[in-house]
Image (cartoon, rainbow, N blue to C red; front, side, top):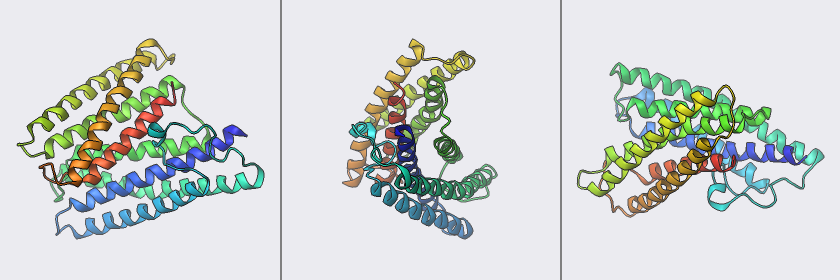
Length: 290
């Protein structure tokens, strides 16, 4: 029963996290479209409203179940001594299970449309047929995150996790290039006068790129007989530590942006907060495998 309760709680937390991530994606696309891109504006606005609604519903359902934060929150607060829903059983547990399943299904249906929209944007960017101030590689990372959400929500529902070594490597392969991309985005949008911050972000990108290469090589070595070898455990520790430093940087950057203390282009506090939540999510996933 404890495993079943945990599965329901994790589904509720995942729904909450991913709805907020995709609300942000739609917002970033909407905010960076040229004013004459009317059809794309309408699509982006529709997705923004959809995921705002889904986030509100997911948060309400999770809080009603005694869950205090979305997936990623345990990276800061630590996993609670008693899992949410631990005392529930029978009909009451079934009710929350149905809520989680319905929420995941609604999320996946909306996500299919958003993923298709992002893929369409990439093609238009590659053909220079859209006025959108986002690079195609950034939108491609958004597509990867949509695919990751489809994988995670499906596995939570089906209770079919990967072997721990492959699960760790999978998260490294998804989130290390994502973190490197975050550092690159910040670097590219900072004003030239912010030399110190630009140097820091360039250093972060090099570190995460190097770890990504290592994770690719480890995957090629371990995919046939996956196990937690020493080199992978070290990568887990090193990535968690470096992401921790990056998280501190993002939190400080968010404060500076909120106080209008950093010179940049379209670098907004919401973007730093979005990146921070993703790094927390990555951290929690690796910590859960140790």
